[in-house]
Image 1: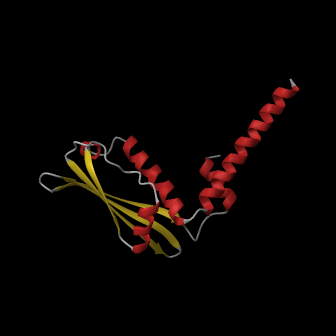
Image 2: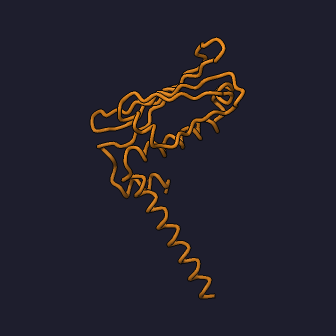
Image 3: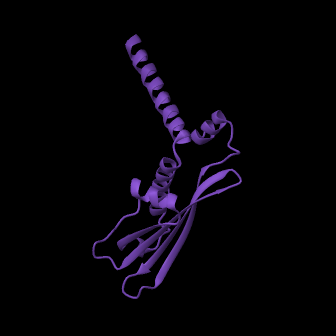
Length: 150
C-alpha cells in the first residue's frame, strides 16, 4: 500500500513540475516562440468554433506576407498553422503578419483574406490580434493560478 501512495505522490509531483516548467517556458519564451504557439492555438480554436465560412476549408493556396522585416524573418523560421486544405480547392488564403509594440505591450496583428481563385474577388476577411507580452503583467504566481483557473 505504501508503494501505491509513493507512486501517486511521484506522479503528482511530476505533473506539477511539468505544468510549472510549461508555464515558465511560455512566459519567458522569445517573441517568435510565443507567437508561434499562440497562433497555432488561435487557428485551432477558430477552426473548431464552426464560425469560419466553408471556403476556409477549400483552400488550394496559402500566401504569407510579413509586414515588417522582423515578421518576414519569423515566417522563414516557424511552423505555419494555416495550410492548404484541398489540392483542388477554389480559394486562396492570404495572411498578413505585422508585429507591433505600444505602451509596453507587444503583439502581432494577423489579417486573413480569403479570395476566390477564379474571379480573384475577396469573399472573407478576418483580423486577429495576439498579445505576446504586457509591461503591466500580473504577479507571476497570480497569473499562473489564473491561467490554470484555480
